[in-house]
Amino acid sequence: MRLTPRALLSRMPFRARLAAAISLLFLLTGIALLSFVVLLARYGTDQQVQGLSVRYGDTVSSPATRFEPMRSARPDRTSADRGDFAMIQKIDQTVQAVQDTALRQMVLWSAVGLLVTASLAGLLGWWLAGRALRPVASMTAAARRISEQNLHQRLALTGPDDELHRLADTFDTMLDRLEKAFESQRRFVANASHELKTPLAAQRTTLQVGLADPLPENLVGVREDLLTTNREAEQLINALLLLARSDRGPDEIESVDLAETAQLVIAELAPQASENGVRIDLSADTPLAVLGDPVLLRHLLANLIRNAIQYNHPGGWVSVRLDAPTVTVTNTGPHVPADRIPDLFEPFRRLDADRTATAGHGLGLPIAASIAEAHHATLTGQPGAEGGLALTLRFP
Image (cartoon, rainbow, N blue to C red; front, side, top):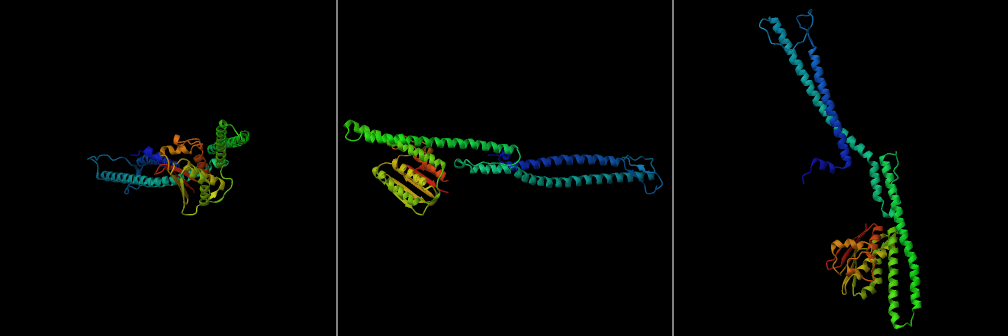
């Protein structure tokens, strides 16, 4: 694609554009000044030449005669007149040559000096632009450091009350509102979850005691359905609590051996895998120790492996591979379109009816992604070669 000057200029960094503008402005101003000086020099030289007086060597006592433009020779002039006329013509040509040479030299060296000075002005403009944009650079670096986990940080720009200072204050005010909104959301989720766990526990106890055996045959199924519903509601609340905790970030930072953690998680989920007819394979070629919260990291691996077991088919398999600095969990199962994978990392989002099991709430992968982000890791997914998903967890 052919780039126009406007498009090329728009791709230049702001600092380069500012320096180029300063250099171009200096160059245009210098050209205008140089043209003005040349015109005045030409005009002034013409005026001075017209006022020159010429003295002849053989007429010392005679008064000086004013220089006049060359006129055509007359046939009745004497030889002295013709000599004087030739001398005047020679002086006129000499003065004109000196004038032209002086103007050419002045224009040449002035142009060279103007280009050199314009280049120096461009370099000086680049330096001044960097000095002027230094607060913007510090604001950009601070904004990159600020995330959901450290919204308490502020730019706190110092200096005079100018446009940059007001911009920084506006950004800090926006961060204040964002921090309050996030804290309010987290407190609501945590408080609501805690408040709901108590009545659910009381409800489960009432069901177990009030509907204890022996029961009429028609009430046994009702009791089991109520207990199942109660258990699912409690699991949902626990998942919401875990999501709220993962959003706050790690509470404790220590070195965690993910290979050992994966072995513990697989042992814990082995009954579920056996019930679903799924085989789990663990491969850890190299030790993988990361800094983070051991409880959150255990939940992270558990959610990934549990998701791979739950959305699988009888006779399928789950592969857990640790290869520093990545953890890859691959499973068989229903085909997952690539364009629908981002939806699986959203809370309460499921792919379709095949992935809508009664034991799931659509929070497993969102919680895993939130914990990964809190540990500065990335969690991505892609369709598996034999169906299912290939989830890749990459630590920094």
